Image 1: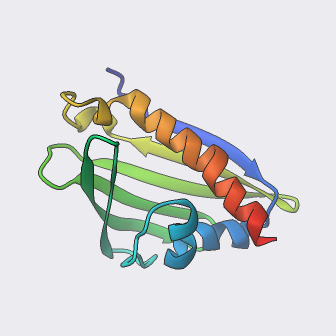
Image 2 (image 1 turned 180 degrees about the vertical axis):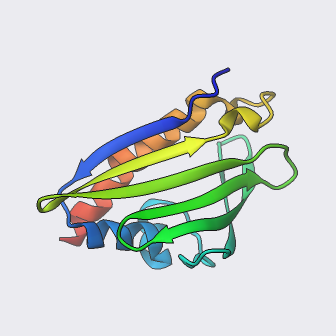
Length: 143
């Protein structure tokens, strides 16, 4: 078990504002992330969504802790009925006409290690797919 956060960086062929919209607009999020119908990028806002594996779905409980428009979005992330709490951070960096996104998910070691769904490898695979495949595919379709 590692206390190191998962960090994934990816450069997108899209301006910062487009990537910001993709990670903060609930209608866009539904197309590449999760159906987060109650999402609002406002500090203190709480939202939930369901997700998980083929074997089990989980209710995710989240609360926005930091919002810097076009730069940073951060929220707590834990699961209904389970111990543990983590923090998910999206940071955006302009690189000319492109945008570098840095995703950091810390605190994974606080989740119960009794299910493979909470294993670091599961989070790494999920975030690698979401940031490496799902989001760029969505952004490419928007242009």
